[in-house]
Amino acid sequence: MYQLTFSMDEFLAEYWQKKPTIIKGGFKHFIDPISPDELAGLAMEEEVDSRYIARHGKEWDVKHGPLSFDHVPEDNWSFTVQAVNHWHEGAARLVTPFRALPGWLFDDLMVSYSTPGGGVGPHIDQYDVFIVQGSGKRHWRVGPKKDDYEEEFGHPALRHVKGFDPIIDEILEAGDILYIPPGFPHDGYAIETAMSFSIGFRSPKKQELLSSFADYVIANDIGDVHYHNPKLHARKASGTIPANEFADLEGMLRSLMDHPQLMRRWLGEHLSNNRHDLDVIAAEPPWQQAEIYQFLESGEALKRLGGLRAFYYPEQPHVVFINGETYELPEECGVAATYLCDEENITQNLLGKLLDHPAFIALLTQLVNQGYWYPVE
Image 1 (cartoon, rainbow, N blue to C red):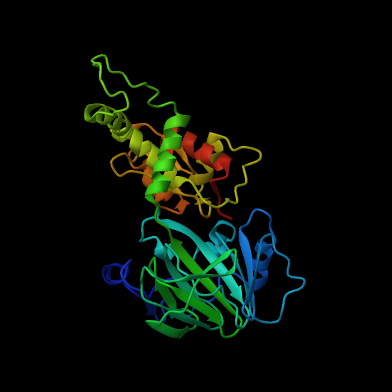
Image 2: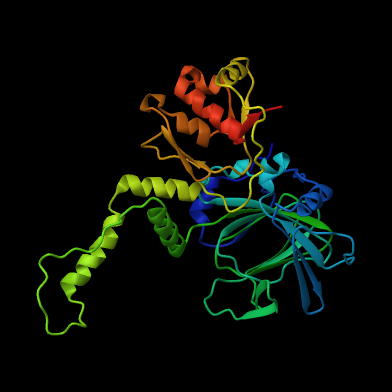
């Protein structure tokens, strides 16, 4: 089991979205949760997001997955696999220590394998990332946050920045953690064959929220009302948009957002949507409710699918948002959402009397049959 050696509260107060830092020995006795061969196997799969990056002098080569490793050079290349926590149960355990951070901000676990000299070049990301060094050593440089870094394009798929003066310039060894907030340029390359594990947290943009809400409004046929003004007066200048009419039209738009329950439902579904594919395998044959009840009553456990996004509002713990969908239970189910969204395993001891509630068992059976929860082996 992976356990951080530092206080997350102290880290958040001093570093989160403020400044980068290296935490030496952030994990003690760190062992890679996935092997290079297993990672390469994932990179060869069609549904897994992977990328190969190689440097030849000043030239860069980039290939997107599924990858093949038949003809690769000896050094100066690496490959990355996104959302490894969706596909590898052992790797997913590395995410657990970071569950003290908001789940709706968490994006995925990206894993990289690099030969000596391998890296992706100097660049800037717009998300928070904890880079855990696995086997091997990697040299990292991080520069100050500025608005005037000049971009250069060694390859159309890479957005590099030109040189920066480092404020961090160190070699990471197994168990060390490099934290980089958004906007800080950084560059890392392997000194020897190395594995790195990046736990990324990505916040939504205003544009993204507006676009998603507009799609939700249209898809649900909300606000299908025309502008109406029975007090219209004749005017001499037909090309004008008077202030009162501008205010009316602006009010039409703002009125769409003046529905707290509507906004809560849309945002819950939006935030629970996943950017990456899940390893969903529907139950076959489907479970019956009595079978789920008996399974848990016998002391067995159900585990949540790796990477599944499930959230709730504390004021409405009987409503859950899972993978872009809303599921509502009777209010007497009380804190049902906390078991589905805060816990990784569901057991009889955890549920207590809730196990005897037919509506909860019905929902849990539905979720198991969809492949969102599965029996612990």
